[in-house]
Amino acid sequence: MFLFHLIKQRQRMEQREITEVKDRDHEWQTSARDIVRVFSKHMRIKYRPMWVDEDSVRAMLETGHGCVPDAWRKILVRPITAEELKSHTSRVNTLGHCAGQCTGRYE
Image (cartoon, rainbow, N blue to C red; front, side, top):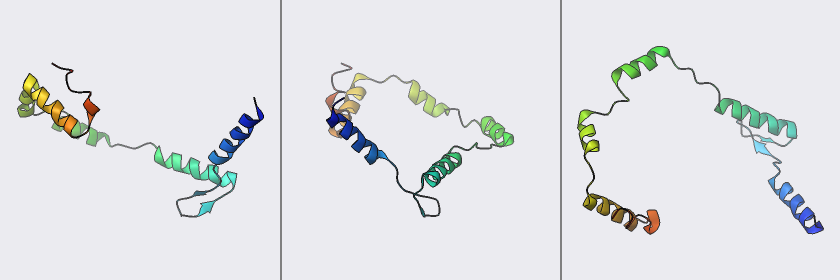
């Protein structure tokens, strides 16, 4: 490893080093122990288990929230015509999405 690469590696390490963070009380924490404490507390709060009532889950399953209504099912089953597909892909291209990759693919 050349000296140049070693110096650049050190500079990158220094740039990426976390020297201070704000905790939930909006106070700056600068010691390594406090920074680790703030991150671990944040991760524990963010990914803590979520308790769900069994009766609530059963009620959601019984009311059919996961089912598609019959009127929508008829629309979804109907096949798409070539004109509809071409119309949709040309609209996507004029909006700037897809960047020209959609046209001509389904002809």
